[in-house]
Length: 525
Image (cartoon, rainbow, N blue to C red; front, top):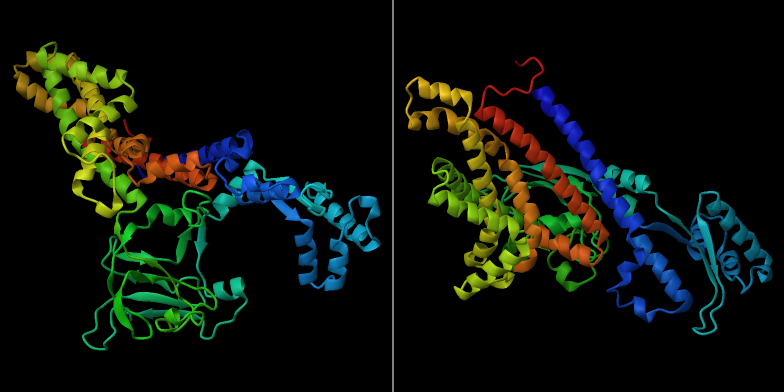
């Protein structure tokens, strides 16, 4: 069993890589990259050379290509000590026509071209624009190959925090850098008496002040030592890490009693366990100076509501439970009452769900629910349990129909099997045959599909969340597609692909637990 699961896991991970590669190919190579400017207000304000350079700058940000301005190349030479400021200034002053460049400009333009053309870059030189009075400029660019982009994505997927982070990123050497372990987190033990057992690992010189800590928020133990790097959102949640966009709780803020490192205690939404280093911030404002003793001042806020994945999981899992509670018994009833009224009514419902587009019946039930006084959309500021009702029902409806159809089919197939006929000839009653034989065998494929049903509910929530404005992962994906937020699209693709592999493996495990006759070892007979 272990060997089989390991093999299945490896095949699954390979499939995940290929799925992400295909999505990257579609986004970065086959789609028109100008679409990212469709809702960019800055794009329409640019003209001439400024517009051209802006396009390449944004394409680099979105991950389409590597863009190197000639001015940045010269600045790097200066920083490396290869040229002085006077030479940099002369080399930067390129003429309208290349043959009219100064000797210094010609020398460094040639170096720039030779260096980057040898690396496969394309050189673009823009002349003076008389309409916009914009001076001439030059840059190099190279489209990023899909396999190179894919390799960088997975190689940088995990980042390990370390005590050299501050020095490497800011050039500042902190005193007493290192790791500290304590059994009594100072955030919980501010009075020095009646200490609360709260283990924590803290760093100095690291990006995060708290590398490991315990608190009252599920899952109660948290870590910042190993971080998942899915990139940064460009438009949907501009400038925010995609992983945190998916996993951090959402508005509104929640105040708690916080004792800051300086000893100041107040009601605040700041979560000091999330503190990260930002150079020079402690002394930059009186607010930080009154609260912090170092530059670990950048903190997240406590929020009231679930994260985006939290909303999707809650709605998805409840809808699956509801679907099984209704779909399995109804499917059994249809099989036992084959061709009778109950079976015919159930068949009509199944055909309705299959025939009618999901958008149509979701909108239908949304309006019917609204007429009954149920909320038709989510409002984070006024979240109530009634907001979950319509999205859960809309997600459960197709699953109920699917379960009814397959349970009925499996049971009818089993009723016509030879072992059932043999049991009847042996004198067993229909009730005994049903409980001991038919149900046990018919339920096996249904059990196998439970994890897949959870995944199906999450994926199906892409439409449902968009209609009900649920702030979940599905709604995030539709927004990312509409706003061409490539990083979020790739990140969510990875998220759903990993869930798919997990659901398949869990389905196999459940099936083997329900029926001991099923074995995944090669020696099994």
